[in-house]
Length: 190
Ligand code: AMP
Image 1 (cartoon, rainbow, N blue to C red):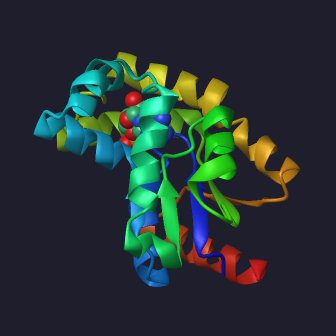
Image 2 (cartoon, rainbow, N blue to C red; image 1 turned 135 degrees about the vertical axis):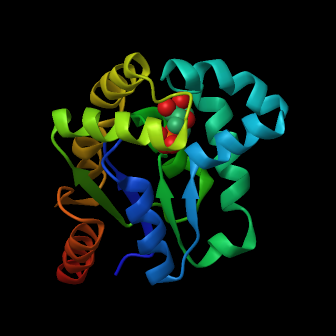
């Protein structure tokens, strides 16, 4: 089973939940750039101040800021034995930055979580009500989905070209059903 994994999928696909569960099962740190950025915003750091309005609009925080943040995180000792990246890379430029210099060996396997778009909007609006995330109003949600489609989804085509396999997993069903599917797909992989 790959120990340097990337979770790819549209906002609302359940990536975060599944990534936490899988990272725990594999014993590797779960590295969510969305979580890191939200923490920076709530702590009022310089990075947080630069990222806040961009996140609220549903756009991507500039690559140089995010790449530097991930570089620092990957240099921490717990990432030496593997990691599960969630929300990074978000575009081809970030993927290339990761491949070029952040780590020695790079991503081993990409897990693509697939969910149909109507279902995503319903889920995201439900989550907005539940969690009160400021980037979960309908306009921002539509923007985040558009950004995913144009910037992030192309990574599913990009990775195979760099020799990294992409395993697609259907993201509908209960949390446990989806998790079982992911574990099954990874087991079939190796
Ligand atoms: P997420 O929790 O992964 O959906 O991320 C929430 C927001 O944080 C995104 O809508 C972006 O504004 C920002 N963000 C998270 N990861 C990245 C990234 N790798 N590059 C640029 N912006 C990011």
